[in-house]
Image (cartoon, rainbow, N blue to C red; front, side):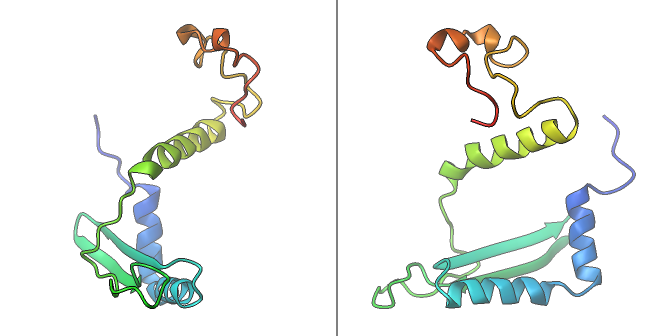
Length: 131
């Protein structure tokens, strides 16, 4: 496989954020979200092949100020296993839809999708991608 001449769009976005000094905006958004108790904590790192471009850790392990756990750090590990299927599937469907390969009203039981696995026979024949 050949290597693209341009970096992926995500790296271009990160490079643009750096070029325009947008990291302070990311810091402000995460600081506000934790301070306003919209989320208890946020930890993030962004980088490319050259290394880390940005990193930040905000908030506490819990919203309960009485909890003894304290503040999160860059080393804090969150269990994201339950998000993998949702994140991967949503991203894949969005890319397939954007490319015209998948319709949101398309029935999942169609032969080109899950039909060959007998999906429609399981009483899910009318289910669409939107569902």
